[in-house]
Length: 277
Image 1 (cartoon, rainbow, N blue to C red):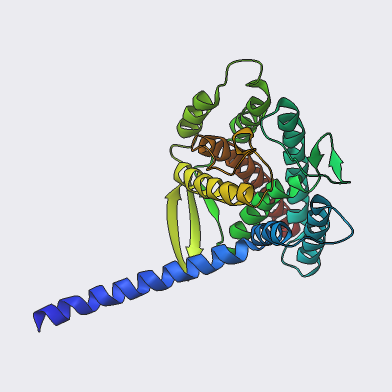
Image 2: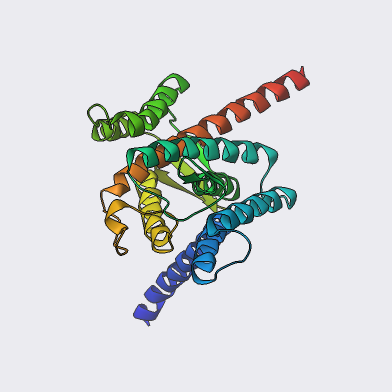
């Protein structure tokens, strides 16, 4: 009888945890609509040869239509679309440089290729921003102990610029990673699942999301989204060291989204105060 009495609360706790995990997974899945379409399109165009246009051009059309539909259907707001467009441009600039430096390539033909880079590639960066914006809204994300604007912006700019400058001077990514840990040591991200708020160190969330992006990168290269030099003859696993690159790029994405969200929140508060006056 005692064992039964003791096990009942434990069983309820386990059931509640499983239910919360399911809710969290559902919200994450809803936030990944754009990335799922990207992977689905990569797989579809890899297995099925579509007529009239090269594969890269079909991908661009599909992603443009998907972006238009998400905005028109209300899945994305006008502000989120602006953020996603910004990330498309940031990602495209990085792609142009990296392809020029031989870091990776897009070997297939396409009318929408510019200096060897298909324009659809920017959407893969935009999909990360889409996920962040969607998850931010769905999980009611809030930040605690967020460092000041004057620190966050130069740090994000330094991380992004290092992707370019490390080809010419020393790579400082690990120094920047340590700096991120120091700057965000006390920072926490809080989110809501099923009416209950949870808390996580921001640095841990950076690593977890970056790791899953690395997994997504392996899937993308398997379906021929792009090609690393060591994958020219046959597909192979992307080097684990790329996780650090994705974590740093994710940090840039997160910092920009968080900064814009904070600026909008501050402006809304000011507008509310002026209205009350």
